[in-house]
Length: 112
Ligand code: SF4
Ligand code: F3S
Image 1 (cartoon, rainbow, N blue to C red):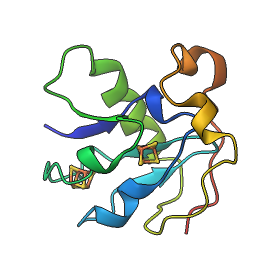
Image 2: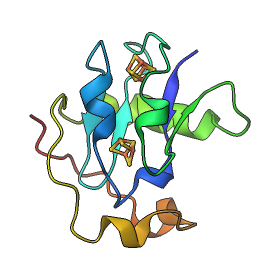
Image 3: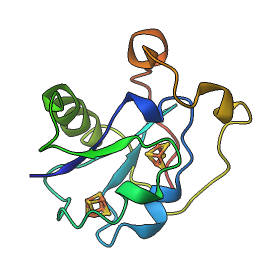
Image 4: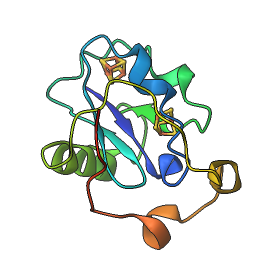
């Protein structure tokens, strides 16, 4: 199994998660992060750290799509291990529905 980042992260990107991961398996896109499922050791430490509740274990229902997206983009985006500033309007997007359809960006972030 693995943990995955879901669309609740999009445009929130609080990055508390990256500070606690013991294996540094978060990767940065323009407006969300993903987890590399092959590197995640399923420790679960990151899940309660996310203020947007964007991180789930893949044992939850309906996470197949997120496993695919996390696997695909973790291979393309740069690694991130240090928390940076969140977007200024992050709180406006917390808990919004349909963020993947409306705001997902395949562009990479800048990483560490
Ligand atoms: Fe990292 Fe553990 Fe979260 Fe996996 S579950 S991404 S290993 S902190
Ligand atoms: Fe995203 Fe939550 Fe991490 S909003 S960047 S998964 S702390």
